[in-house]
Length: 110
Length: 116
Image (tube, each protein chain N blue to C red):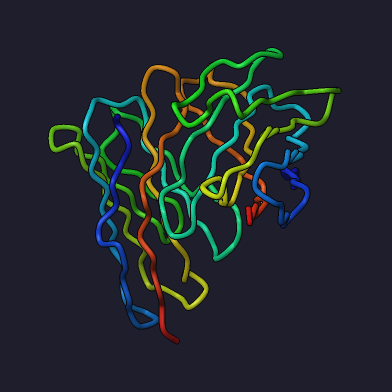
């Protein structure tokens, strides 16, 4: 299975700090995506990075991809209390069906 | 903004009963999915559906599960005889296409199934 595994499982920071979450996977991939899930809600797509890309930005989000290490990181800069959520990475291969990990639970204290 | 809607939001059922979870995907999307998430665990792929048939399914999606698109808007997941371990949040998702080489899913809010 190429599913990603997020690290750490839980992260607690103060508002204004940066949050970094990592994702590792096992096989080659086409794309890697990051999704966010607020408690008890569905997943919301944040950003997609293709296997031939190394870095992408979207607002306060920065995603990197290192295919040689089979890993990705999601950086949220200047975090806000509203960023409190679980963050999942999802990888896909031939069929383009995203496979998710267990997620990182982020708590941002005001 | 278009969204995926799911009903019911929460269903409680007795073990052995049949359950149907309903979803209305985004209208111009072509690919439909069911995932589930047992409390605190990973989001697991169940099945994908395209062109009125199952395109891929996981090991979880055994003979107790079935999907249907009975009309032009609804997409349903049926569990024929529920077990305790079927208790989970079930998410429906849809996507427009994969022709760009990327597949971004839009998820519904989920249906929480509790089997007693």
